[in-house]
Length: 213
Ligand SMILES: Nc1nc2c(ncn2[C@@H]2O[C@H](COP(=O)(O)OP(=O)(O)OP(=O)(O)O)[C@@H](O)[C@H]2O)c(=O)[nH]1
Ligand SMILES: [Zn+2]
Image (cartoon, rainbow, N blue to C red; front, top):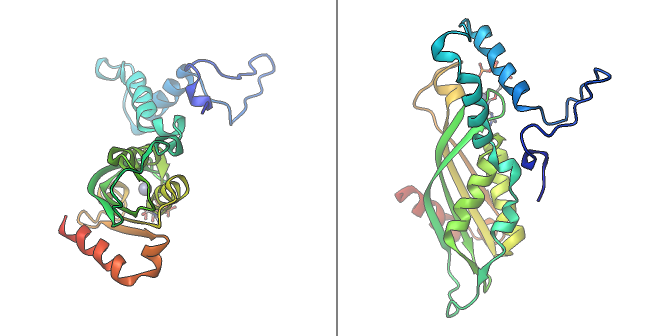
């Protein structure tokens, strides 16, 4: 999948002749660094002092890394499946997957864990792929609700299991280190599809196992 972020950093449609700037065009590396320089001045510091001279470049590189998910297609990560599992037909669960994202409102970290389960319908997937799908959606600007729904929908659509269950438990630094400043609060979100939506006992088993993590 090709996106504007795959292109080299400087390949952008800048209309410098006419002075028109397209807000949807990918900015150049220089423009991104200039924006960081403005932010440094806005914060009250001097971008020309020794310790900050390389900071705009570092921040630009770091944000490419934080947002690498925009260049990926999580559906592709679930393409390879295995069906020789001797008829295994119970829940498959990955517990305590570290989750790192950034909130779309303040662009500060969301840090926590995700528990992901699915009920296979003949096919299973390599377990690392569930964590890869999570990472791919997490490495974007997110709300926790959207992230939870996107991961569940992707697994449901790509793998077509009998159901998917997700629980995310995360701390939002926009709440813990600024604003309302409640350091111990974590946000829980869940999404259940198929059998997990319809079978309360199964849902209970999933939640119980997540709690033990
Ligand atoms: N529902 C939801 N809200 C989020 C998430 N991440 C951050 N928020 C909230 O988004 C809201 C943005 O509210 P605003 O009033 O526009 O922004 P603000 O003035 O910075 O708000 P405060 O954080 O209360 O200081 C805040 O209440 C955040 O706590 C998320 O993943 N899901
Ligand atoms: Zn926030």
